[in-house]
Length: 331
Image 1 (cartoon, helix red, strand yellow):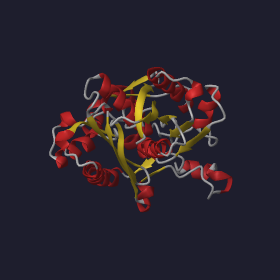
Image 2 (tube, helix red, strand yellow):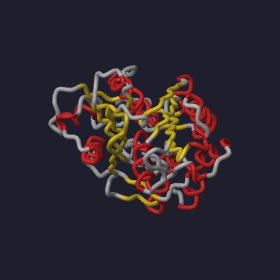
Image 3 (cartoon, rainbow, N blue to C red):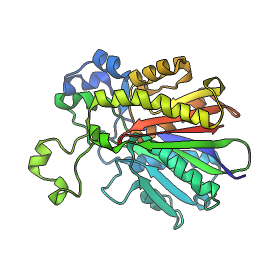
Image 4 (cartoon, rainbow, N blue to C red):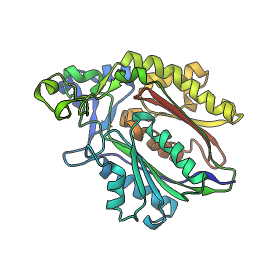
């Protein structure tokens, strides 16, 4: 039976480190306020001229090197992002061009923080069906360019960082690999976490002075709604993955959630009745890198020995849409 396994991983973050202290004057905040509400100590922001495709390229090269594959081996590129370099086309075709790949399928998906698991599920279907043997999957976001870096945007602006994470997915007939994926959404809450313009509903896509002055091109989030739903949906979708595979939390070496907010991670662990040691967190180093958080966290958790060959891990995410998802993997 053909299954899908991860054979290589890599990530990339910008060189520019933005510590909480760097935001104090910019956003009228302080280190204690940010740490208390998010657990974040620093994040990485791109510099002018650096975009999602640049970070994706570096992460992809690392993942390909670890997997021992070349550009000729890649059958498809899937990129999860809401912040491609251009309005269109997306990052996937930029990667295909920059890496000199063949005329393969390459596309982006736009489900925010859940994009990496959504992409994992899509790739899994292509590989299990036999249509592809090797897929490059990337989660990347550069949200620093749409944050309002002022006191008015403080509640959201302190949370986000930029980054990219990539994996190589390949066929296997071993008992390891992706065991199941679980995808959900609830669109009625989409306005609780969104960027309204540019959009096709507006003349000139909304790039007009009056709409820009209303900050409608900035990332807007109802933090209370996001928190309330996230702490409910995370445990639900994690349990769904466990039940599907006849596993319990005692069988899991590590739960790797989307790094949205340390308070959410702590609340989820409490609801599940598990130690924080089981639920991986690196948000203090990078902030919320949206679609990139899970692949970055997977890389670091593996390097830190949190899981190894033969272990079961659970990935889980909650983000815009509202969209949420999980995946069960045997490493």
